Every structure is written in structure tokens, then in C-alpha cells.
Amino acid sequence: MGYRRAFTLIELLVVIAIVAILAAILFPVLSQARESARLSVCAQHMRQVGQAFWMYLQDYDERMPDRRDLKRALGYRSWSSWPVSDPRCGWAGIVLEPYTRDWSLWSCPSVAGSVLGEAVQVKQSVDARRVARYWMWRFDRLDDPVSSDNFWGKTPEAAVADLQANPSPFYTRPEGVSDVELMVDPYFPRTIGAVEPALRGRAVHRGGRNRLFLDGHIRWQRDIRTE
Image 1 (cartoon, one colour):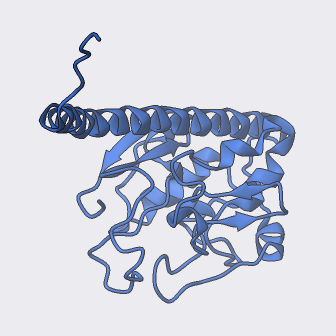
Image 2 (cartoon, helix red, strand yellow):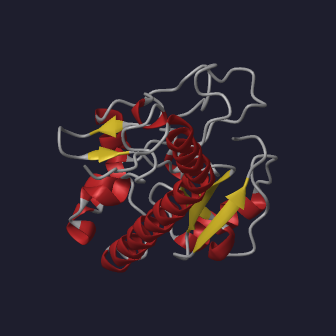
């Protein structure tokens, strides 16, 4: 009878150890590559929203939408934790639907299905199919008349002028529409004590967020207050 050599226990353990080491090395790399791809998709979503916003402006005499009624109907909330207003933008998804026709644009792939994506301060459902998970700070209150830092019904030029005339520690003085934020990934700074412990320091993307500006360009902002 011939003799057939088999793996010894030591050899098997060595192979398992090598596989484990390779997995430990490759997993962070693959995870980083996946998040980088999601970050890119998120930026593409924002870019398409920006294009839709400008198409709306062209159709409505260069005036931004004033749908405070729709924002109220979707359930306006002002939280005592963070944020203190309601920057959720389900209303914008409805208003811009004729220009986008794809509700996946209103959720970053990194936030959908996550703890952050289900937070009441982030998720705004229009119905079972239409959900928005981005923030628009310049459409976050229902003041009447419209406050200087909100854009309801204003032209882009008037919105910039209002921000310039009313400086605030919460935003830098803009020189033009390219300095004015329109939409942003949700984030919960760890430095704000009122933030719920489960959300403190959490952001859609690690260490920062994508920002869509009023002229349609996208910019990444690092933020050491988030993980």
C-alpha cells in the first residue's frame, strides 16, 4: 500500500495563522476603499441635487423655493439637543422631484441603514419609498418674516447679501454663492454637551463631511469633532 502524507496539526495552525494575519492586514484596506467609494457616490448625489436646484431657479425667476408650508406639513421639529432647529430636507426632495426623479439621491450610501441614518434628527420619510437624510441649514426654520440666515423665497444674490450683512459665529462671511453651503451630510459634534450619547461624535463619513455649495460645487470639510 502506498503512503499518502497529510497535513500535521502544526502545519494547519500555521496556515490558519497566516490567513488570519492577511485578513487583518487587508480588511482595513478594503474597508477604506469601500468608504472611499461611498464618499464619491455621496458627492455625486449632492452634485445632481445642486444641478436640480439651479434648474428650479431658472424656472422660477431665480428665486429659491418658499415651501415652509410643506416643511411644516412633513413634521417640523425643533430639538433641545442637536440640532436646535430642523435642517431635514424632505421638502426639497418633493420640490425638486421633477428635476431628479430618483430619491436615492437624498441619502448617502454610508448613512442608509446605519444608526445615524435612523436617527429622528436625520431621517425624514415622505412615504415608504421617499426618504431624505441630508441637512439644509438655510431652510431649517419657519420664521415669518424669513430670517437673515434662511433662504426661503430669496434670490441667491439676496441670500448672500443677508449673510454678509448679518455676521454670525456659526458661519463665515461669504464673498459669493461659492462660499454659501446649500446641503451637507449630518454630523453630531462631540464637543456639544446636549448631543445624545449614542450620537455624540458621529458623522456619516469618518472625520468630516461632504458639503454642497450654492453654486453647485462640492467640498470636503474635515472636522476633528467627529469620529
